[in-house]
Each structure stands twice: as structure tokens, then as C-alpha cells.
Length: 153
Image (cartoon, rainbow, N blue to C red; front, side):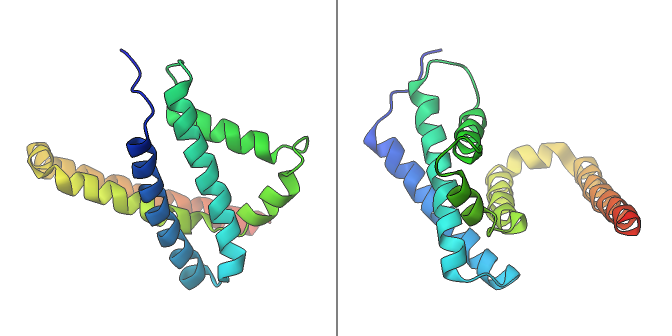
């Protein structure tokens, strides 16, 4: 399988998707978690920079690794104590709530499922029941785990 060539249209598409995601995260971080725009914007910019860099490296490095491996590697390299910008990166990124980051991810997942209704219908009601049970089990397990940790600490 030959790698796709990196071109300006591809980068513009990524930038548009990242910009939309960044705006959603910014709004979620401000409204949901009480952060200010100045607290949030720099952390979001760092995260978007890491993501764009990882997507570009995925296209130009001839290894068959997922983009997440490149994105994580870049973020780790910028965050380790040996990095001259690690304090700056960590200070800014820790201002972003993890749940604010999850909002656009879950929205994209919902849109992608909604785009493929025929495939979703093939799963049938049994798939919907299993999905609901998995979600309920995950929430219940998180509640139990949190309760245990709160009682310990």
C-alpha cells in the first residue's frame, strides 16, 4: 500500500477540522469548567499543534503506525523534563479539562454512526441493547471505582 502524498488540500482539511474541534473544546472548557479564554486558548493551541504535527509525520514517515502514535510521541517529547518548553506546555495543557476534549470526539463518533444508518440497522436491536448495556456498565464501574478511591483517600 502506497502512502498518500502530503498536499495543501489535505493540510487545509486537517486545519479546518482541528479549528472546529478547538472551538468546541474552548467553549466546553469555558462553560463547563469555569476556565477563562486565556487559560484555555494556549493549551488548545499546543494540543492542536501536536495533532497537526502527528498527522503530517504520519504522511511523510514511511512506517505503518497510526497517527495517534505520532501525535503522542510529539506530545511526550515536548512534555518531558529535558524539553526546553516542557514547563510551558504542561502549564498550558493542564488547564484543559479532559471532558471538554471528549465532547467533540463523542460528537464526531455520533455523526459517523449517523452517516451509516444502513450498517447500523444491520446490527439490529440486539446491537443497540448491547451498546446501552456497555455504556451503563462503564458508567457504573466508574462510579464504583470512584467511590472506592474517594473512601480510601
